[in-house]
Length: 207
Image (cartoon, rainbow, N blue to C red; front, side):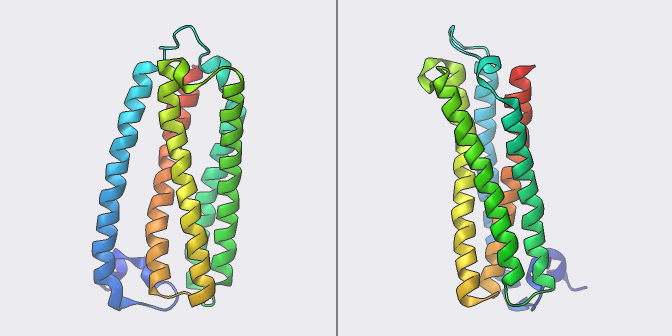
């Protein structure tokens, strides 16, 4: 097996594109740097939330505001989208016209929309209970952290829609495969961040 196949197996699914391996090397390294910088931002927000968890200033706290069942459903939806995105990538190995790829991407997009819908519902419910961001340090920290992740998921959905359009117009070319590699890194990163949010924010807040 050649070294490029080890570095970027996604480029070799379906029709091979060995000519873009060097570009992929630089591009994916740069994207990893971006993800690590994003991880630092989330790390700082997690630290802020942990420091402000008990700073409710007499207002509503986690046990009053959090809906653990809804958060668990969000977790299932987002983790399921990781599986379907993986299936979308693997579909390149057996299909060349993009139909199977688009189908799996649409399923992934649907699961992400379900996640976002449940999350928005949770935010509205918290606001109805008096959980406004300016009410306390705890709520300010919460609304700085959790909606930021939701904004990332929304950005991923927009990116996925653009990729679907690219496949529909141009087919599965090297640019589509590079886009899938980068979006895959981004999507799995968001899943990891959400697992930490669910564990630290929701489970930790209700402990």
